[in-house]
Structures are given as C-alpha cells and as structure tokens.
Length: 238
Image 1 (tube, helix red, strand yellow):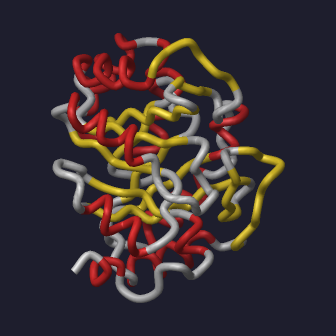
Image 2 (cartoon, one colour; image 1 turned 90 degrees about the vertical axis):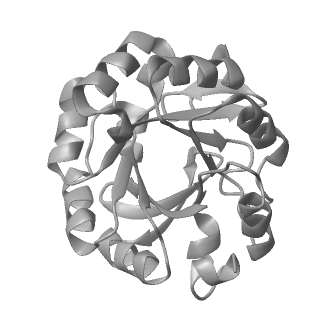
C-alpha cells in the first residue's frame, strides 16, 4: 500500500481543516515545502496536495507553493482542488505535479473525465470522490449532490479513470479512524486503484488499511501533523 502524506494549501500556507470546514482551520506552516521534505524523509511515496482556495472559490492562490513543493522533493506529487477545466489541469502539470485529481467537474461530466484521460493519459488523471453518509459532496464539500458515491465511482472508472481517491468527510481531520465499511464496499466493486482518505489516527488504522485486499494507497493528514505517527511510515506496516 502506498502512503501519501497530505499538504492542504490555503493562501500559500500549509493548513488542516476539520470535516472540510474553512472556519475550522489550523495553520501549520508558512513554508509548505519544508513539510514536503519532512514527509518525504519519513517514507512518503507520494505527496497529496490540495488547493483549498481553488476548491472553495475556483481560483488558485497556491500554484507558487505547489511549484516550490515539487522542486523540493524527489517523490511524485498529485494535486486536487479547482481542477475544473483543461487550463487549470495544464497549469498544475506545468507546476510540476505528476497527477491531477478531478472532483466537482467529474461529478458533473463523465465526458470531461474521458476527454482528460485521453488528452493527458489515464495514469495522470485521478478522480476524487468526497462523500458524507455515502452521498457525493462538491465545491470544497460545501454542496451536497444527489449522487451515491458508489454509483459515481463505477461511472468514472468506466469513463477511464485509473485511480479513485475516496474521502469520507465525516472522518476527515477528526482522528477517529477511516470508514472501513464504505472502503470495503468500494473495493468489492472496483477494479481500478482505490486510495483511502480521511480519519487515519494511529498506526493501527494504517495496518488495518494495509490489510484490506486491493487497497492501493492511503492519504495521511492530521495524524502526521499532530505527531501521532512518529518514525518511518513504512516501518509501521512492517
């Protein structure tokens, strides 16, 4: 299982939110690239970057921070948040990321997913599915849709996405453990890569995720910033 430390960006700072609420923000650093180097040294396989300004408002204020992070590390980086048109996706690749994550736009247009997979290569396009109680939420988690997360996952896989990142909003930033039940359901239905996000609070959580057959990766956020996973991450997995 790949381990993807998360760096959430807002106004050029590294921050963490609780359940995706901008009003529940903790600022960890004005130099996100320093965290990037730290997470790489602790065994991160990828870095998971989220442009929160673009996710909430559609306009990025963090591409310079993304560029600095990509230059600071040797591991690949992926970027989500505001990837709603080809121009934004190209700008992310130009900043140095290896993969972009489609969120809101993917839930609106399967044709867009298919087009971007064809243009940039399906290995460079992931789809982020963020759900609360199994229902997809978009635009920085501020708008609930009528889509079931499972239905959207199957649809974007069929459209060509080779990687899906599933975030359980209720657990994100809460350090109460992932939604193992929902992840198990998705793993039983999907053949593409599935990355789990949200709720990891301990070495036990990571080991339980690692034991799930077929799980491709896990995104780790607040547990790292709060020092709950000391040492090399892969040593935890044995």
